[in-house]
Image 1 (spheres, rainbow, N blue to C red):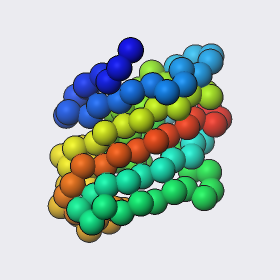
Image 2: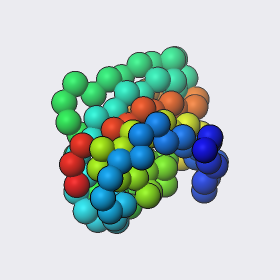
Image 3: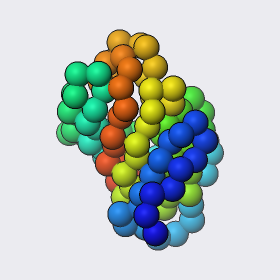
Image 4: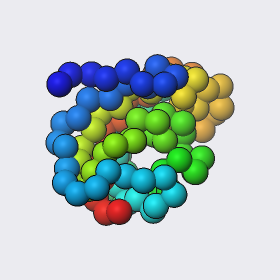
Amino acid sequence: KGITTTRLGVQYEDIVIGKGEALKEGIPIICKYKLTGGRFGAEIDSSKRFQFRLGMGEVIQGWDIGLEGMKVGGRRKLIVPPKAGYGGKDIGAGPGGILYFDISILVV
């Protein structure tokens, strides 16, 4: 299927589609992820499961936008531009820069 571009320039590519219902706003999601990019080319690999609620502003906008439609067991690569990532904030992978995520949904 290739790369899909969504709001704010967030792009994604499904590596594994997953099964069951698509993720819904407000429902707790447990995932694992790997991040590369940012201003200094940082690399972060989640060693533990990470939990958040989709669409509730608990994660960067790039995740809230880019994970829409995913299913449990799915794996997706996201390309998040600065305006949907950390912007100028010095957190996560640092300010500015494009963020590259590889995210697997484990549990909903």
